[in-house]
Image (tube, rainbow, N blue to C red; front, side, top):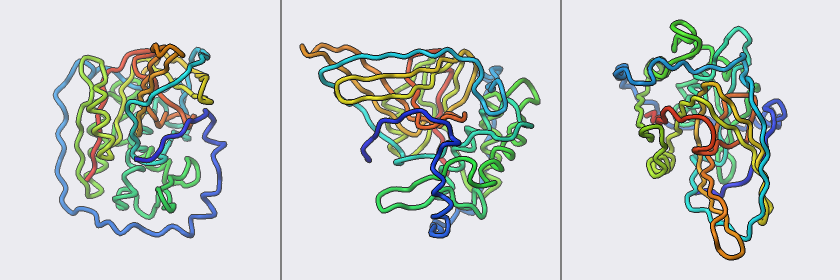
Length: 298
């Protein structure tokens, strides 16, 4: 798999606009869509069925506290590292008429990711372009189709119809309805149990190219700086419910000069579904993981 890189937090509006220059060079992928569609059935009601995942304002953010952690280390080991691609979509809602929209944005990131392989998911739209060694996804706001996916999922998921936001069953059903109506199949595989993430299961799903939806009741968004002997983490800590999408993971252990373990963090590379990019979620750090599901579209 491709070598990972450290990221720094920035707003989506700062993304490079070179995408406009290369759009003319993008060639359509020659992957034929499946013609068989099956109906995905709603899951049995679970303990989290009545949790509604929502942003506090239309493009997310809400209230948060900020913490900064800095530490020195003598060595580090990366014990697990995987990514579905060098980069990934990070779509977020830009329509002020749509509130509590994180679930729709999460689904849109998954649709945008898979549209590379199944172009009929978003007709007449290419989510990125092929570089010599990897596929590069365009940033949010360059094309109307990106917001259009969010708009469509907002209706398909019934956001705000039963509560403030979207429940997990609404999310799963709405995303499935969108996918099957565009001629593809979808399946979900849980990679969590009892509010704990199964790292091996997560790794295997990412290795298979399947992004993972996080269902969160309280969460963190982290930017990371590391020069090889010291690290600095800027953490935004939220108390609200939210959905994000995992596209990569990295488990890192930091040691002192005596070889003693100082810290161990599992960083998840995420589409925040907010106007924040190149960020991580630290496992078991803030809030509660309600569930995590890998999404496969074929």
